[in-house]
Length: 408
Image 1 (spheres, one colour):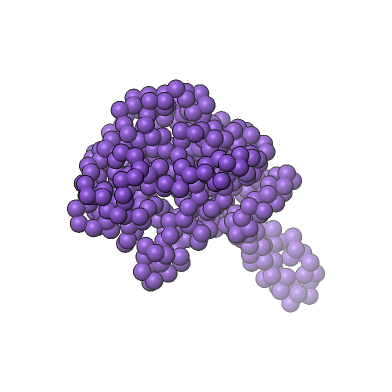
Image 2 (tube, helix red, strand yellow):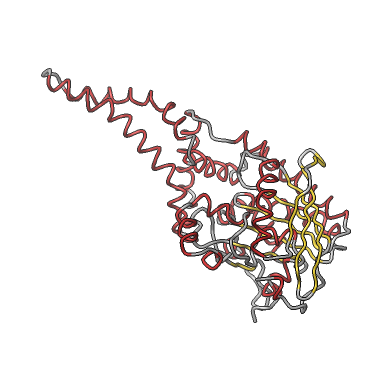
């Protein structure tokens, strides 16, 4: 949706905004994302046409887990040109991610096997299958590759030994034991796999398993600190919109942090005209399906059932890493009243309309780029445009007016 075509039936334009952003399971921190958006800002402006400008200021560390910079936007809204000043706060957990990053070692293999066995035992994978069948392919890909590696290493030794023993007239069955020596090549092969996404995806499964079973105190502590940081920033007030954004695995972190901030310090948000929440490429069901994660289910409810919060969930149907158009409220075991507004509002970025045919074809063929595209400019402007979300004149509520209607 172009701001130029937007009528003024909604609320007043956003001239001052505060954005709190939580990234995914990524060892790269604020510096990487700041540079990414600084390079992308001119592309985003160009997609909106002449007269649109986006710019980023310098980074500064505001607190131990908060890195802050300014973002300025200049866009046409109807017949008026609006200048928007945004204070962008990046809540860091890349240090925790690096601590949890998969290691090319037996510990990773054992942890992955344990995750799979526990998931089968409690019916976790069955529940995920009911939510989105396609995701199980993503989930089990690293497991299948690890099994293939074990089998390949075993056969690489067992077959030549069996052949040699047979030719020598000896009992070839000794090769069944000799094949175990092939496992000595596991660590070198794991180091090769480190360069791709196999170990990363496997560790994601372990990460969520540890949260579900209460085995990640370092992550829970970081979420608590994020919740305090969000409430502290909200308490400063002085903005037209307060917008919290989570991307990828960061959607689950953002739900917990923002949900706890609302549960514990709701009064700090009371004076803000518009409180908004956006989840991009959501992976919410990975925790929401599990009854053991009741704390997470309660945090979903704290956000979804807060009448003052506009929550929009944006997911592309061809993003195989996320759960697009899947309402987390029923997945988390909650029942929404029949006349309740849609919260979260489930939308797609409609990339097919924002790229030409060839560009869209390339995007669909690149799973990693598809999952990051939520944060990047598109050739044509759409209502899910990241730079316009954070530095444009429309609040999330006005950009998605269907989020404030009743289902009826």
